[in-house]
Amino acid sequence: MSLQVILGNFALILFVLMVITGVIWCLDVFYLAKQRRAAANRALAEYDARNAKLTADGIKLDNNGNRAALEAGILRQPVWIEYSGSFFPVIALVFVLRSFLYEPFKIPSSSMVPTLLVGDLILVNKFTYGIRLPVLNQKIIQINDPKRGDVMVFKYPRDMTQDYIKRVVGVPGDKITYENKRLTVNGVEVKYTPLDDYLDDERLVYNKQYQEALTGVTHRILNNERAPTFNPAEVQQFPLKDESCTYTYDSFTCVVPKGNYFMMGDNRDNSLDSRYWGFVPDKNIVGKAFFVWMNLGNLRRIGSIQ
Image (cartoon, rainbow, N blue to C red; front, side, top):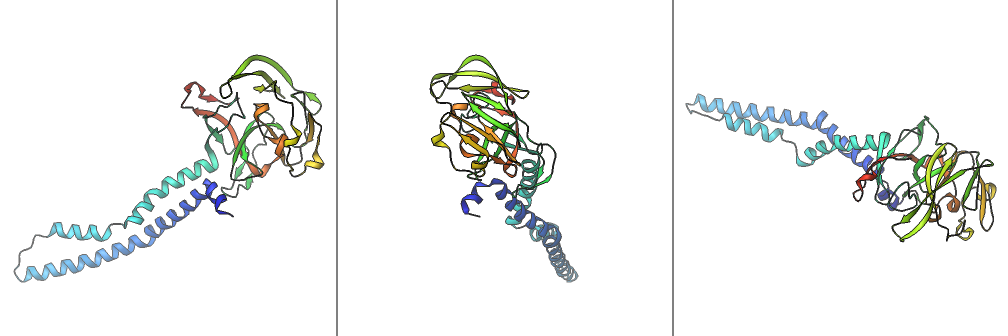
């Protein structure tokens, strides 16, 4: 595993920190603390014996404060143990929460506009699609499978250090056709309802906006009338491409292989997705995006994700 992969894997970094601080905490609780207690008892016994001898010799002593300070000094944890013990429960809690329950993400690009905007801070449900081992991302308990219309976070197949977010438009076995900027799933044309044009804040242009009914899941998408339906020159080589997909100059058809998913951005003409780099294997799934919990530039963005 390369250094870049390690540094790009926050779960791995958290896991290593949790193990290191946890080992130190356990070592202190079950061994080092007992050693310090035994050393303190020996020192106090010697201190008491010395004071008893001095008292017997007629020397009056008042050293209760010194005795307590001696004991506290010996029992005090070294700084490295104190910090490790303080950080361990915090790191462990964060690791468990983001590995098995919910993980926060920030939207970096406009590929999912208008559903998700740049700067949206979202929460991703990590257990909807099954319980996976942290770091390894190996599924150990099956719960639900991704459905068409889900907004899903996954590891980019061409660079596993990057997290991508797109919408599921094809599940295993589906036949996906994209032509004239319209989807057809298993021979059934997806229904589109025109909406008011959408202002692209980045380019200061208006895009056509539609309500897409993807097998029961309704959401908004954008089309740029000035862009071609599809650019075959940008299609990369990817696993199962030749067996599963056929391309023309302005359309394509793919049959989604077993254990894979076909993903597309809602900003259809401004999204590099499964049309260009292929299918997303089940092992790459991170979780289902379900809530925008903050956007510092627009507090009205807070709410559920459709």
